[in-house]
Picture (cartoon, rainbow, N blue to C red):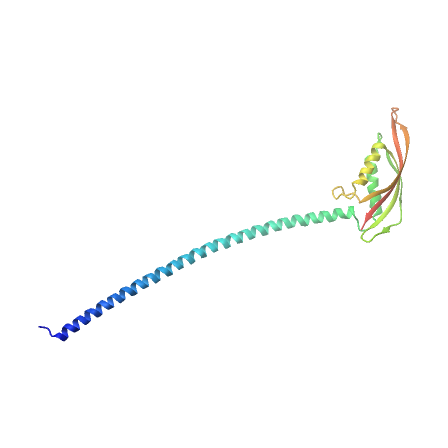
Length: 205
């Protein structure tokens, strides 16, 4: 019959094995839970990184598109600015530019004057420049013989001056004096002719 000390040693050894097995099981469960938790964190971080990478790529593409759009708009704006500055030189010149203004009146006269409707500029008298704070005025007096229709066209020409589209020097009428005459053409048809003297202010920088 085994002695008592041997039986006690055997039981103690079995208890130790069981305790070790339980401890290993607990450690295995803990390790499994830790690994699962970390894997979940890694998976979440990976998903977040992937989303951020896609978002950054989309932002870069959007930025490139915005830059290209800006460059195209910038070129258009610069072109428009150049056109406006070029037109502004004619509409609101940096000097009195009376020679160019005389040429414009000559061109306008040639455009209006026909055998059926007269428009004749007999005299242009430029006067002394008047300087203001931010601009200057070139006063001038014109003597014109015109049909009624062309007289109205001339007034409209002065009234709409300053338009960048029409490139007409900025002007206004300060006074006008009229007298009328009757004129008959070759067919005997009477046409009302207006002789008028007009005082005009032409503006420049």
